[in-house]
Length: 103
Image (cartoon, rainbow, N blue to C red; front, top):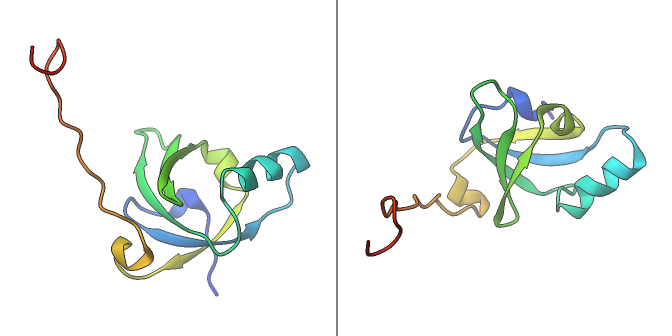
């Protein structure tokens, strides 16, 4: 099993959470309460221009993690398409101009 950090994965990559490194107890609890538990697949959606934060999809919602915070996750890279692992394609938001819908 090869492990990696979230910051090493390119956009569109999928990984499975293998565990959480030794970290402060309250931070570990925070990660677990956000659904980042062992065996959960995550999808890298986007990375900010300077690499921080990182936008991931997990359990049907998008989550933004600071790079240093994300380093607590022990990940195993997965092969395949996002749909094969239960992720839905990202829908593009339509812009309605400056004044909203119907303006």
